[in-house]
Length: 203
Image 1 (cartoon, rainbow, N blue to C red):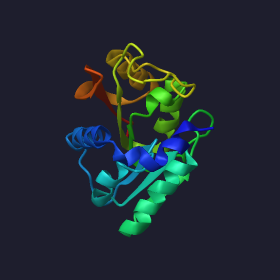
Image 2: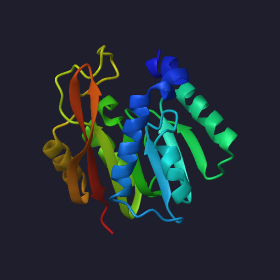
Image 3: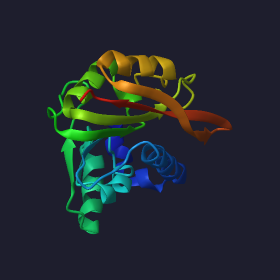
Image 4: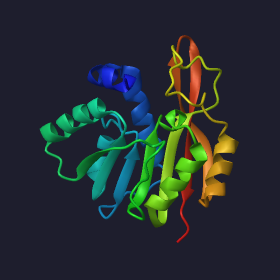
């Protein structure tokens, strides 16, 4: 059972989560010049919290997620809002590919530590981008395993070392790579830094 199916109905009720998504969006917006010609993918979209921040500024955005229930909640929100430039797709990052050469931008928020083989998936993302396409990947910096109250099988990494993640992006073929801390999540009297990794596909 995908535990995110069980969490979907209450996912948007956590104020700390909403604040973090806003900070991640601010980090993306500081790096990316959105245009109405952009086709965007959001990996691990969940209930669409990040996606719906980006939606007003782009031509189309697709949310990919492996939880049917999360996507159901997301689709209900989209239908209620009447957005016509949004779609969703059930997607297992560990064993499925993305569409080839389709996106101008790929974003992701707090998803990559759930993906088993980071490098292999970055290669899928690279293939999914058009020439000159960009990525903004936000996730936990390396932590001691206390970020999650319970260690479940879907947690494959206790965050990432920023330099190692940047090296993986460069190894994949991305250019102009950089990783920087953009915000913190406070939990149980601890502060967990969140980084954003940026890279650009060769033209």
